Image 1: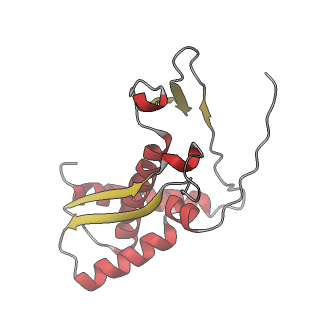
Image 2 (image 1 turned 180 degrees about the vertical axis):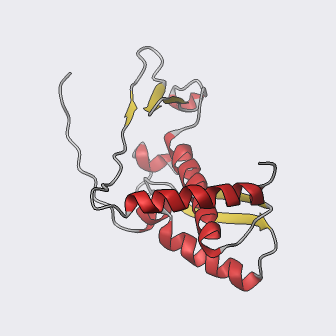
Image 3 (image 1 turned 120 degrees about the vertical axis):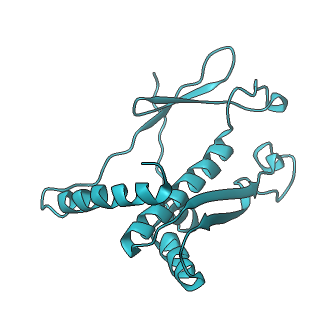
Length: 173
């Protein structure tokens, strides 16, 4: 596979096989599990995701060593990656072919909120925006239809714009 268009053709065959598997009566949702362990002495947070480890850290101002992205940066990275992947899925569904695709996500974080030094300062990242840059033989109208479908189908995008309950508990170890 030398081009994105070639990859989209390959992806179409894989998606067809997965659709068939997911249509079976015994199909179930896929579990997700991620574990972050704080390294003693440094506060670095290696995060285990399947067979992968991503090192997350803070900037020096928050006693970090800048050894990896921050958690809010990973949130934006997750959104960018999920949007890009969903653009590919929708392109396959619609028979569109892209020559290139890039998704940039931007936002801000106001640490005054987390550190409780600014009354009314937001705690979560805010001002999130994305720009998808793509090239290919696709009309402007089709691109707009694809964008609408992407925003309807992207799991991370939807998790950020819809209320999502999260339950937590603390266990002694």
